[in-house]
Image (cartoon, rainbow, N blue to C red; front, side):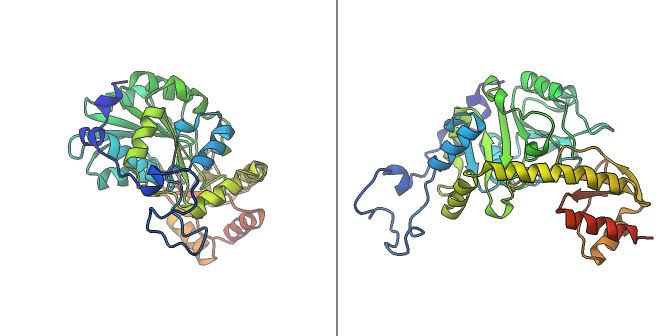
Length: 344
Ligand SMILES: *Cc1c(COP(=O)(O)O)cnc(C)c1O
């Protein structure tokens, strides 16, 4: 890896971050008259903790990493955008990403006017570290990987991920949004071994909190310090911090949901594979699966007309005539199958 100071944009290195009232004075007091807050309507009259100390402490224990290795944001999408703003000089630098993958990397690249280079996955939806390295040059600051990948559902080869981490001299963002559903281990225990690794996780999937908007980035403390420098001062609101702390009191519930969803995933995939319209069901390590069908547009419309909404991924690379189907409750999954049995 190149020195972090060489990877970070010059303006970000020199940036004097905004210092909020809550940043400057954190201790107990008799009267907080420093932030122009309304003294009424407690506790929501107060600005939230800008660095979410309590929440990070709990999450650090659960995940087995130090608090200083954690960034919390308004969804993973905030962390993705910050990666561009910290590392990529508009019109000069570029990033490389596997293709197909999660659409937000490319959107964030466009918004930040950063060239986005795609490395096509093979027929088994796998990538080679060599191909990512071949696509990169001295202006490539970041490589984006997603495992389990969206929309394909599969895990990327962990030996190729390791090889990329060892040979690529920029940052590697590994999006693990679906890690809780995966049979492969998270890369989190490897965090301290790779100073160029940024792991993304989220409360939006297994944790059942997509509406809350809470994303997590894990990285070395010096990378996390740059995230904190560039983020909005109060990027995670008080209601989200409060609810997330409550969720962390009952991790067992999340494990139960995951167990149910994994069992339902197997049942749903088996039944889907037997449908007349089904060409192929792809293996998955996430809470969704990709299925090739005869005439995806027509199957999609039939489902939608009957109140069942899935994602048509036909226009995505390697996903011709494919639908992406999220595993729902047993009742919802039965409805999907019933509606498709009536499809002719
Ligand atoms: C759903 C998803 C996310 C979650 O994004 P949030 O902003 O945290 O809701 C992140 N990455 C991938 C690949 C996803 O599919």
